[in-house]
Length: 243
Image (cartoon, rainbow, N blue to C red):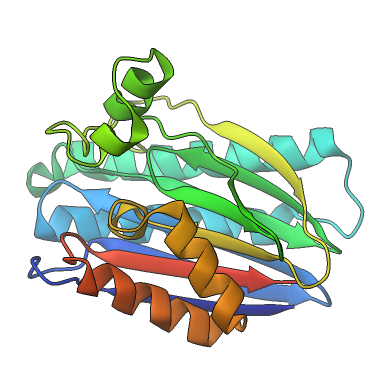
């Protein structure tokens, strides 16, 4: 297993509110997360960093070598809930953090089996030698418009509401996450990213870069460069895991 993460402030922002974390916790086992904070420079940093740390700690403490899908789902649900509570509590107790929140996409991978959770519009993609497939569904105004047929994916990239999300971690006392099981075969990759990447590049460009460069470190650097070359309108975060 090879893992590499990278974050960049982008071309237009002066602060980076994204956070990524990963940790290998045994042979062929890893936990990982990408968060994209909101609520102002300091508050966004706090929200994404706090959520990522709490989420990863809970997974690290409760993941087991052998788990049923039901157990895996339950520890992911608890990890999301604990992260949400800590961000919400911090925002409630500190006026300068009021209204802060963050997206989250993360989970664990062991022996080729992954379980993922997401809240917001940070994404997970599955990349195999032939294609790229989006695993997660965005919780966003744009995603709902696309699903209703009101706009096309091409129109979504220029829509004035493309950054509005319908779920976030820490903005309310309770949050609902979606869960996705995934099998990652040898030489396949799992790509996690903030919308600073997915909002700047078509899925086909993500696939071409991953297919061309292969190794997580080189691929992550090329993806960040490509997002910045396309305009770099937001912070860009990439986390790649290769089986």
